[in-house]
Amino acid sequence: METIINKIIDQTNYSFIGDTKLIRLAKPIDINVQNVSIEKVLSLCFTNQPMDYSITDKTVVIRKKEKQSIVDIKITGVVTDSTGTTLPGVSVVVKGTAKGAGIGAVTNTDGKYVLNVPDGAKVLIFSSVGMKSQEVEINGRTIINVTLKSADAQLDDVVVVAFGKQKKTEVVGSMTTIKPADLKIPSSNLTAALAGKLAGVIAYQRSGEPGADNADFLLGELPLLVIKCLL
Image (cartoon, rainbow, N blue to C red):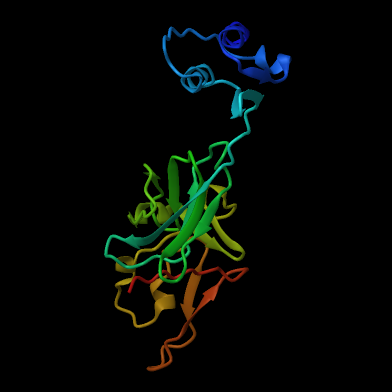
């Protein structure tokens, strides 16, 4: 860069102003030009350099190149399930890049979301309870609609507890799952139908009188029964 500047000064009546240390940071330059304007020469010399320049009258001022501000891109869309029903509460986050880590939004009651992502972000992650997570490439789009698939197979590994939910492998204690088909016995009472199917639980009837067939559980502590119904 210094060599080219000196040649321009020798062959023209232009002068240069700039920090010598900054000029020495310039990348190597290899150009071969003839009968071109000084503007063209400077444009070739300062391409992909850590400094910039401006021309006032016949004085070239060299200065440190200013960092370009990061421009956020606004992305909107709607999240639905496989039946076309909109999904509220779906988490939409930028996949953990240095620029986009922690940036996210949640779909509203209409399944819509608005997310401002930094320029350069590449992938969005959509996730929701009971649905399979999905990664979607942005590819310069500003409208991204997504359809999430159900993850019913994963629900069997989750147990509802008093303060939320846990995986079966993390629960301390005995658990027994009974299918509705197993309760089809000659009895009108659900408690009696559970007899012999829950470990440590005894069901008995206090009376054989017609109409008085309410059975009770006999055990040290009352069990927690979780009934799951699919409508």
